[in-house]
Image 1 (cartoon, rainbow, N blue to C red):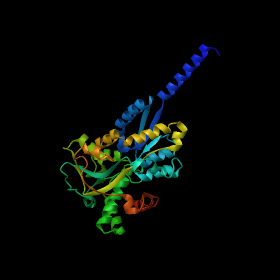
Image 2 (tube, rainbow, N blue to C red):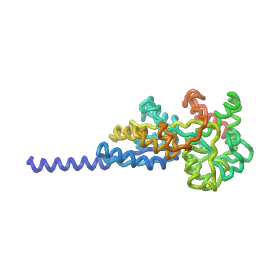
Image 3 (cartoon, rainbow, N blue to C red):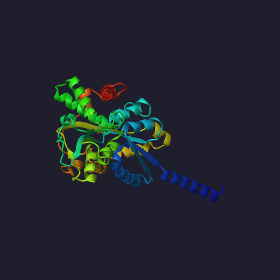
Image 4 (cartoon, rainbow, N blue to C red):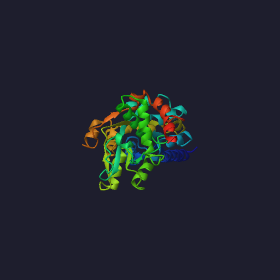
Length: 332
């Protein structure tokens, strides 16, 4: 081979490598109400990645009801990373061999870079006088909650109500069951995800109160305006831990493991923590939250593991086939 041909070949190979780098993509499969956050986070990470590696990275996102999203990944959707609102959905990836069982220990804080909670949103003036969980079971109160079997939003709302009733009754399981049964008797429609429930409440005008994540409450009030709706912060609510994970089976196949890990690592960076706070997700970094004084009201938060022992127990007991939710909802 002549020197000219060697140079031409090297240039061609270099060009192919640059093209491959230019076409590298990552897909983040997430739940309904993270759309706005990741829409801003993605270009921030892409710029960071380009500065530190020189590689161009195209970031795509997919959103829907959390359990439906995870089901899509199990069925073959090529997600490089999954960013969910609860442990049970991520555990399904492990049970289906896409990630290891010890996935939570691979990133700080059990792979939870930010948290949330469930708040209420009501019509202007709060005509039904809704202030706490106990008001949700009153006669004539229409409550909008997404399906707890397909939505992490709905799952947290259901368990928040259960734990509230359990605490109010001194640990009486029968009282908690009766409370949640009365609550879901007040739910006129079960949307599959949080954003669908928001549409039902905000655009279709159904319901007196919507239960949803803190960041979604802020978005609704901003979009509809304080003349239409207002937020209600109950004295206590449930801690929503939002885990993230790279999908080993996919990233090894696509050659994106390095990028996927870096993407999730960046969620813990000061820039990303501040961005999470901007979009009303509770950041781990207290200094990031401090930049938004008054944004995160003081509220007594209770977790699922401290009540049930583990998410696995809660999931199987309440949302498994024939579980408590099926028993109380299907027999309404």
